[in-house]
Length: 190
Image 1 (tube, rainbow, N blue to C red):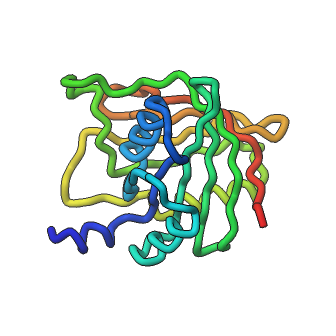
Image 2: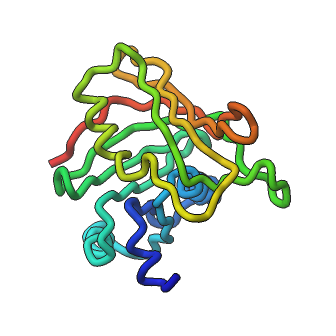
């Protein structure tokens, strides 16, 4: 497949803040492997405006910027959905309990082309719609290449404005979590 044709398949661009730590690079790599139709890019010295222009030129409508803090297991995500709004949605997320793929072990490899999402019953409808709109292009997408890994995003609990859950690899390891998360309510930034 030609390079231009493959670029057209991407729906989400994942990048980091300037000068990311080794841990942050590993997390962004894990996110890109666990979210189908995503492309990871080293940010370098690109400004936010340049990244938005790059997304526009490549036809990518979703942008996820992974930023780290001094704590090794805490990151924040800035999400952009250019179809819904040109503005940013701030998502404060704490990711933990990582199961990074181990080099040379095929059973730990993450190669996903299908994900599904489970929501708790008590989640507000507006929050569910925001999440659904953001991940919609990534759901149910299959390619001609078959994989051994299907992932499920399981939102298990909604309390005090926080969503708790985990990303689980369902095949072949029967429910092995890749990471768990706590997400604060998303707010649109003008």
